[in-house]
Length: 124
Image (cartoon, rainbow, N blue to C red):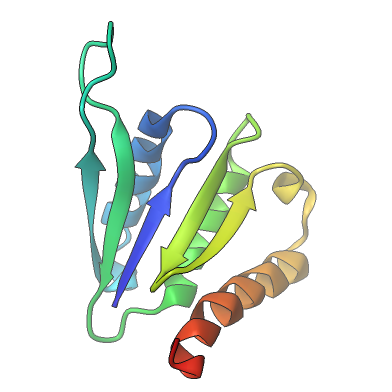
């Protein structure tokens, strides 16, 4: 199963930090790769278009969602990412995450998993 992460607002290069966090977490049982686009005029190099995350055996959307949410909680800006799995897209923003308690974070993670998994269960 494949999941993509994009940054609709802000600098796509911020996703490098998320990539590093995902790559470092061996418990996720997934592989992640950076997908770069063509360099913009007057830039020094390509910008990240997205992260592609392929879940391996035992890998879960919940595990990836937990890492993404934890990463967003530590953002000092109002950074936003979109998670896409088989055409179903969820947008998460860092705004307000730092003030959530662990129960609220667990509920948010469950909602993300349910929304992304619903697409698969419906067969769409």
